[in-house]
Amino acid sequence: MIKFFRKIRYKLMNENKTGSSAETSVKAGKYLKYAIGEIILVMIGILLALQVNNWNEARKANESEIKLYKNALEDITLEANNIETQIRWFKLYQDTHYQLYKESKDEIPFESELDLNILIWTNISRPLIQENYATKIGDMTNKLIQELFRDYIWREKLAMEAKQEFNDFKFDVVRPFLAKHGIYDNNLAYNDKPYSFNSLDENGTVLDINKLRAQYGTVEFDQILYGLRHSASWYLHVLDNQLLANKKLNDALIAFVNEDFEKLGSIEPLKSYW
Image 1 (spheres, rainbow, N blue to C red):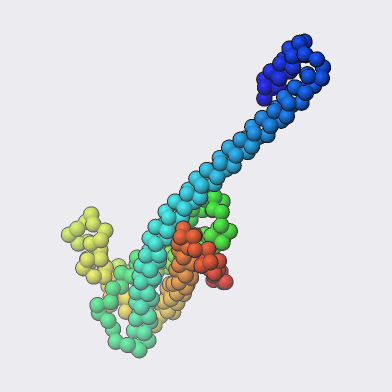
Image 2 (tube, rainbow, N blue to C red):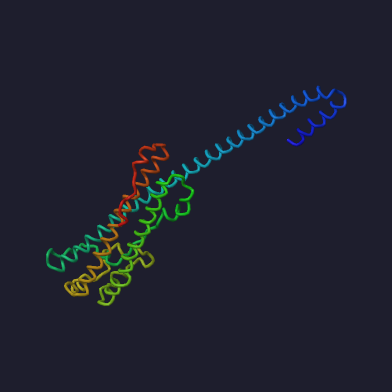
């Protein structure tokens, strides 16, 4: 730009030497208009280039966000399946707890085929969405989706805490109780597959059923049954709400990816945190 004005100045100086002042003034006006026109064109070109660059950046950002959501949809589907598996397992746990309670009160007959290893085993799961997306919420442009992710991650953490409460009760109370009363049966545990953890389950329970039944009706056993019922039902409650939050987040991401913003606007986070 500076070189452009310098050339005009030099040209005017040279013409001023050979022409009259009137002619020079006319030519200077023409050059000035030309220069202004050139400046406007350059500025328009710069603005257009900036606008195109902004469009390209916005397009890339949108493509990146869509890719993020598509990956999230795969993880959300995987976690929904995991939650449903957890719910099935804990309903089985709770069925066993109720069977033992009713047996101990002589309300139903003894079930010899009951899998009592459920009293021993703890539970594992991963907070998949928290691990993969907690640090990426700031990159999401839609406020509702941000809110749904935050809500879901909160519920995921709550589920992990509820599961840990259940596991801790097994570690701290149930297993010591079984050991204290000699209910673990080493003759069943020490089978011919010493290196296989799964073999502990293959031949039924590793508990002495008669010794366990001898504890029916005691205060200690009744309190254990209460703790199992409490922690299992709390975890099931949390999982039910997590599954609902999972569906809302799934629906919102699908709506965004498909540009169905009317449906997206109709989705609301769960009202209660519990």
